[in-house]
Length: 269
Image (cartoon, rainbow, N blue to C red; front, side, top):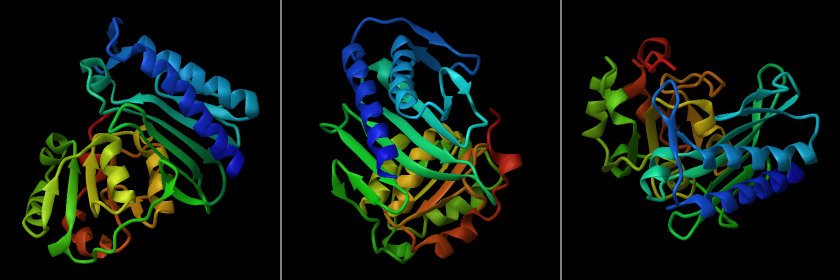
């Protein structure tokens, strides 16, 4: 696993160089069909990431946010979001990250085995890394989830609250809010970094895609946490929602999200 992880870190650093060059710079912003923004920085970052990884692992495939799929039937596929949080990047605040994960194809299911989440301009820089069996780190230091095991002590972060609240499954979540110690809405990479390092205890989030959370899934699991779709389904390529905990709160929170139906409640796209 270590060679995969080392190259993923190298690729993230290559993207970081490009991000620093464009941040607060003068660049055009285009919009995709779903109205989300894309910039030259997004595209150049993804190309730089692919260049590092394809040189090291020429037989591997890719699924990227900007450049699409390449050799997607390979045994190993890199999942890349070069700038997750482009809206923040465009507006000039540092709430964005580079997400790189490695998916290993197999039976009975595919498996995420490497994850790097790099937020180079946030809080002086935060890079979380993990590979299966090697544990998780934040800025090179080992991290682990919290020991909180009761709702009364739980700090819960909600992501994409508008789409959560639009679901018929929102009412039980509203009841959960009244049971926990603290509610926050950190969003994007940040609440996963917080959860993996023991600073919050659970996350509920909808309206995302696998490229947003593939790397964070590996990091969280290696830090001792658990992560599924809101309704309890396994994290997979079609995933659109997340229910993540420190590994001790799943049974306590699960009844409040049991009504979530991925086909009915997850936004299309």
